[in-house]
Image (cartoon, rainbow, N blue to C red; front, side, top):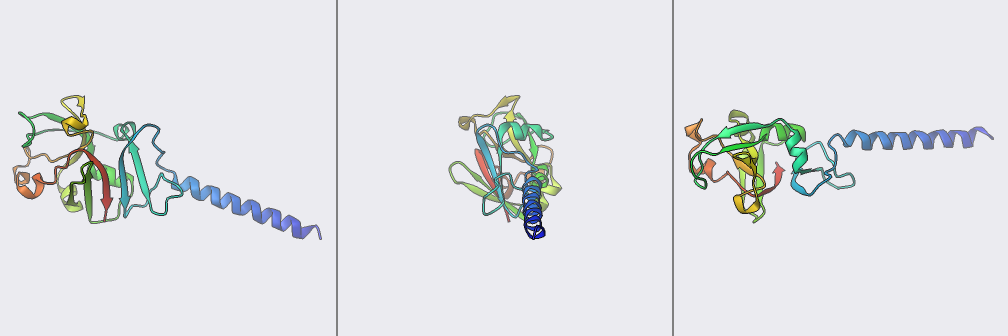
Amino acid sequence: MFMRPMRTLVSSHLICLFVSLTFVAQADIQRPSERVILSISGLIEETNMLGSPDPVVEFDMAMLQELPSQHITTYTSWTNGTPVFKGVLLTDLLDKVKAQGQKIRVTALNMYSADIDVKTLEQFPIILAYAMDGEAMSIRDKGPLWVIYPVKEFPELDQPKHVSSMVWQVNSIVVF
């Protein structure tokens, strides 16, 4: 008679342990502690939004700045001279969320979007910039995040297909 309640108690504890471990395993990327500036969703395996029906990873600026950074000195149609951009390689960002897709759709605050092949990201060091000439970029200055192609270093990228993918004021990326 004593064994039945004991089995139930042990079973309950094992279920709680399993559920707890599942949540811990899904929380490899911490939740943002500041204002969210980027949301990544779609075909990704990571999430920091437990309870969301689909995997979503949200980043604040500090989280992005903790990732390895790259510098690109290049020209754009929207800047004077050749500013120095600092940001995270899009491939590193996709690795962080364990992306599984072949393309990404980068969307701006004004809903402008562009699709970029993951193969292009693997071939060229394309960054999601968060600083220009050492300064954070405001929304007025095409920030806080801007997709930057190294067109000065790789002139073959200076064509409409790629230039139109240099989305500024980025706030979301969908992997598909």
